Every structure is written in structure tokens, then in C-alpha cells.
Amino acid sequence: MALKLSLLAMLLFLLLASTAKAHASVFDVTSATYGAKPGSDVSKALAKAWSDACASPSASKVVVPSGTYKLKEVTFRGPCKAPIEMQVRGTLQAPADAGQLTRPDTWVGFQYIDMLTLSGGGTFDGQGALAWSQNDCHKNKNCKPIPINLRFEFITNSKVHDITSLNSKNFHMHVFRCNHTTFQHLTITAPDDSRNTYGIHIGASTGINITHAKIGTGDDCVSIGDDSHQITVTDVTCGPGHGISIGSLGRYKEEKDVTGIIVKNCTLTNTQNGVRIKTWPDSPSPSTASDIHYEDIIMVNVSNPILIDQLYCPYTRCDQKPPSKVKISNVSFKSIKGSSFTPLAIKLVCSRGIPCENVELTNIDLTYGGDEGPFTSLCSNVKPTITGVIKALGCATSSLAPLPLSKK
Image 1 (spheres, rainbow, N blue to C red):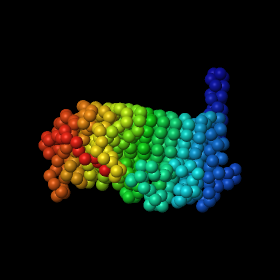
Image 2 (image 1 turned 90 degrees about the vertical axis):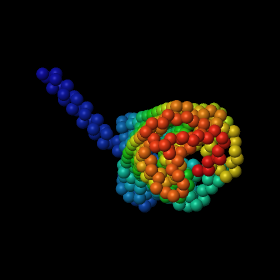
Image 3 (image 1 turned 90 degrees about the horizontal axis):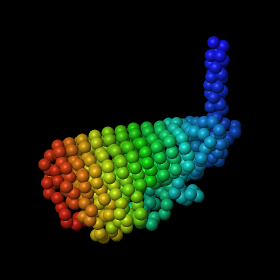
Image 4 (image 1 turned 120 degrees about the vertical axis):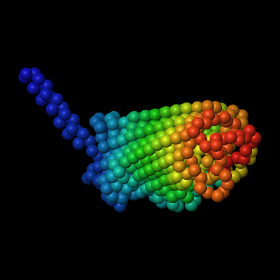
């Protein structure tokens, strides 16, 4: 009995000690140690608080309390000695002029961290209006770098939740070489005419989960680049924006395959595209995009609701080129309903060099109330399996001839 009581006492002591240690590992940027104040530049205080927290042998938390703080730029680097959380409760505000940043492509970065949590209900305000007016990337493929609001590189076993990215100058969130990380309960907002303000772009990552997010931007709400695997996008509302896209793929040498993509229970409203796979013609290297599944998607006044575009070429100097070398296979579009803004509701334009294989259209219930022509579909270089689709959307007529390049 005494031994049991002794063990209980020891366990209670360890629990209390652990709790006390956890409380001791809070790094508040407004504390006397760091001296940050609302309305002031928090850059140095935040960098120092992160450095101290990252060195802590126990779980730590960096806190930015309520209020608005100026932040020039910062990259939070690991590895850290223990799990670490950054809790942003207030608003961090970027310089309006991107020229003030020494790293031209990143405002806030996170690198080489395991077990990171970014949370707090706060806002990362990129103040992007000036940058949007100067952005010529839509017509100049060699345009100058523009800062991304939040860049995640080499992050593992982590969670980003309950934060807002507002008016980024460029991409809101860029995820690269990250594994087993969840993005949840996010709000991502920029006007529909803000160029290149992608919501979340994923590249060279595995096991990324995006769920319960509200995204409205001037470009793709979610985009998935090469070498991405086991990506899940669920319960996302998208609009305005360019839709939920895989790609663009096939533009650069030695791009790697994309596999295992699930997009489910999402709603798109007033977007330029719905669910889309886009690849460049004249790919310098072969690659594949496979095992891609869209299900239970609601479209509200969406242009191009269902789209495979292997003639993607947004620059005005593009000419007709050899076919894409990206092989698309094992793709399903299931239970997609709602309204199309364009009469062409389904457009599957595959590569004439390597046609798409195993494409499935099931239970597609889209309507069109406009007067720009008959409700229709187009399939080129693909023979989809079709079930539960009205005749107008059943790809009854297919084209094998070259089609004009897409400029969107």
C-alpha cells in the first residue's frame, strides 16, 4: 500500500513539475524580456523569442498578444529541441512596399521544424495592394520575385490552424518539402483582381491535409505542384479565385510525378474554374499525374466546372507546340452538382501524344441558365467512363484534332 502511495505521489509530483515547466516555457513578445509593443516593429523581439523557445528542452510557446504589430520580415528556423507553438493572437503587418524586404520572395518563413503548431486566431496582413499594381508576372515569365505571406519549408508532423492570411503580395501560403502536416480552420482572403495570390500552393510534399478552410483570392484557392503525394483537400470553400487545381505541371525539366490526390466536400462559388488539372504543352521531361479523385463538389456559378487542360499556356507569346508529356490516368469526378456560368461545363482536353486513361465521370448534375450557347461538353484524346450524366455533358462528340492553347 505504501509503495502504491509513494508511486502515486511521485507521479503527481512529475505531473505538477511538468505542468510548471510547461508554463515556464511561454515566450511572450510583449514581456519585459523582449519589449514588443502594439504599433511598433516586433521583428527583433519575435526573432529573439523564437530563438529562446526553439532552444528550450521542453515544449514551448511563442505568444503574440492582441494588437497590431509591424513586422519587416522573419524566417523561423529549426531544428528545435522540443515541440514548439507560435500563437499569434493579434495582427502582424508587412511593409506595404516589398522593396523594404531583404529576402524578396518571403515575408514570414518557417524552416526545418518538426512538431510545429501555428495558431492563435490572429492575422498575417501582407498589405499587398501596391505589389498587385506592380505585378507583371501574368505577361512576363521572368518577372521579379514578390514576397509570399507564409512559406513552409521542410516542416514535418505539424499543424497550422485558426489563423488568417490577408492581402498577401503573392502566394498566401507556399508549402515545400513538408510531410504529414495539417492546415485547418484557415481564412485566406484577397480581392479577385489581386494577381498571383494563390491560397495554398503545395510542392514536393507528402501527407498534407487541408480541411475546413475558407479561401477567396485572385488565383487558385489550392494548387498542387509536382512531386506531391497523398494530398487531401476537404471541406474547403473557394471563391473568388481560379478554383482548385493540380498544376501547372510539365513546364520544367525533371519534374516528378503527382499521385494520390483527394478533393472532397468542397464548395466553389463564382470562380474562373472549378476542379482542374493543367499541364503545359511541349514538356521538357515526361511525368505522370495519377490517382486523382474529386467527389461531392458543389459548384455555384462556376466557369469551367470540370476541366483537364493539357494545353495550358498563360503567356501571350505562346504558339502551338508539341503535346504535353504529362501522362494523366486514374482520375474520377463523382457527385459534382450545381450551376455552370459557361455553357461548356465539362472540358477534358488531354495530350494528343499520350492520351488520358481511366477517367471517370459519375453522377454529374450541373445546370446552365445562360444564353451564350447550348449546354455542352468537350473531350479530346480521352474516352471517359460515364455514368449518371445527362447527354449534353456526356462527351458524345470528341475531338482528336489540335485545339487552341488555353490562356487562363
